[in-house]
Length: 91
Image (cartoon, rainbow, N blue to C red; front, side):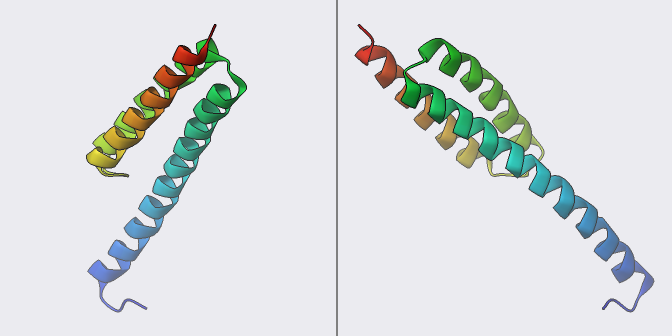
């Protein structure tokens, strides 16, 4: 347990940030999962819409340093590549 006043404040701050970051990461995982599910179902239009929303949220998380910006870019790239592949399979 922290003893000094500043250490106690740092503990409070870290708990608030941890809660906020965990919530953001949870939302990110859900949005990415929705994109992947749309692609798996073959619904390209819905996948594109979900990808736009997920990309926006990934960029926001990267800007807030919840995740690394390269990690956000990697996820966006992989999702868009999967969506492009799904478009190619459409008759």
